[in-house]
Image (cartoon, rainbow, N blue to C red; front, side, top):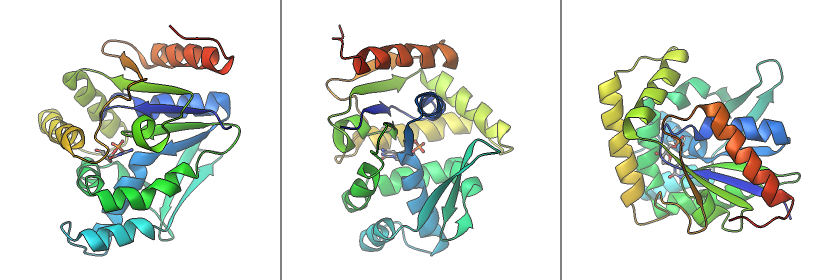
Length: 229
Ligand code: DC
């Protein structure tokens, strides 16, 4: 059976960075499930689809023409949507809000389920999202729920956007993130919440290196078959 590490949690908690680092260290595959929801939103905008049109949004999700290419030189994953580079369209905070809206539609989630599960290939998978441990991979070897205070998460996301050359206003960003998290937490289908057997890790004030080290240590224990307490 392919070992799976799931990392769920609200936006800006550091899931993306931590997941990428651990996937690279262990030589495992990486599933950035948020990117799939973001891509549905980007494709919907591109095709002028109404965000209320559930049938069409589900159709877009089912037929999503996406390819994740690993670029050796840049050590980056390139995202191609319908034959065009889409990375720059994905990271904007509006793409996050659009993703959160389409992600609340059960038909869209169902359409993406098998596509996500197909990422579980040997030697292992790190899956980053909101419902990785609760819905998509309920039998994961280790489930982490990574969180941090709202202020810290907004600051981290702000820094990330700045580093990518995108503009942002910290206060507006925090409000947008709070709205998004509320929508993700309160939706009836696959809401953002820790799995019952998840390890809840509040990383407020803890550097990313330490978070990676803590998860690595626990994952190694799980992989060696030892009991966790
Ligand atoms: O992780 P992210 O910021 O790229 O996710 C964008 C949105 O997609 C998030 O606000 C909710 C949705 N999402 C989801 O509903 N389920 C997932 N597994 C991943 C993301």
